[in-house]
Length: 527
Image (cartoon, rainbow, N blue to C red; front, side, top):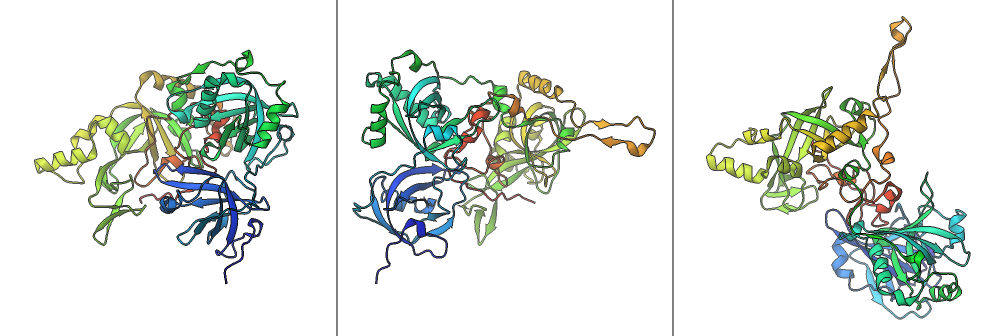
């Protein structure tokens, strides 16, 4: 006897053998920083209850062509997990995860509507009647486009505009990446179409903070933008009712200046979401912190290994020999390990010294040669000792650099994730630090009793990101290195974006969620 079809509202983690009749409302792809793709989708049933589902990387090729937006299906057999996304596409307590035994059968199900929107009105947004961790569908007419920054890298494009609906209230909206490009292209090619009414599916509402107003934004790949789509009844009705209240695309309120390059300086980019600190200030840190320091590289430290490690050929993690095969923590198998730099360097800021760990990409930039090439050159001379530090490495020393690094409380070193040798930039960073010299000072009591000597509050300097209101997303440095035993890309975020990029301003810091999915990686550190 076949299993009966059950409703989405009944789904919990008591079993895996759920069988549901659903329609796919939304489907999108997410690519991690390790270039692994998985699929996410939102489904609803005849009772209009919604649930989110995940297709893991290893099943993408199987299901990518089987599921289409707008189609209905009989699906069964899932792993059920808690809906622990940082930004939830549905308010269901659980999510579904496809597995090898998941069955998907396309069926015409007329009892399930073709469209179902989880709408919230602009009036409700203004009154705060929303959940900050829940994504919503929003329909509104565009009343003004105030800013557009369209640059070659789509993920860094931005457009700011105002939305209204029948409540006649207005809310600011900011779109990033491909959606910004999509709206900008529509604006430039459809000026004869009159006004704009758009639908944002799976959009995020961000509460006002300080000088930043209430704002609606996209959750990157998880958000879908439909512009003047009259096949959607709600869009058609709103466009008709607002026809006398919305400006046309050719009106002055809809004209905008489009910027094709970033307006942010190298300094803004380099110190984005970091604290400019001296080495003495770092000693007072209690939590994982991204820091910017100006220091001179003085000498190499001899650690537990030499100047390089055996890395994976597919990623940057270290490999070990198991059953005659080289395997990394991500279970990639390599026929031959790839030598990669890992150098522990003692550096000084003139007052204190601290140990920094420089990884492969930064070392190659400083030395001008890869670890593999250096190893091969030494082997050709017949004078290769894996524990002997080649003389060529010394080119790194005696250099003063602006260094971006991650402090971890359980480590006795700073893990470098970028550097800048530019003297002007170093000078500006030093000036920023001088403004914060009041922190981490020893205060001596005027009382004669020695025991009255005490230390004042050792709170690190105020985050530079709080002061640089135009901190840039484009690149924190020329790269973010993913090391053999530490992944800096997750140093400050529990969210992995579709292709990790950084938001254009601190105002939009949380818009850097390219997916609503929270993927927390295991950080494995060499001991």
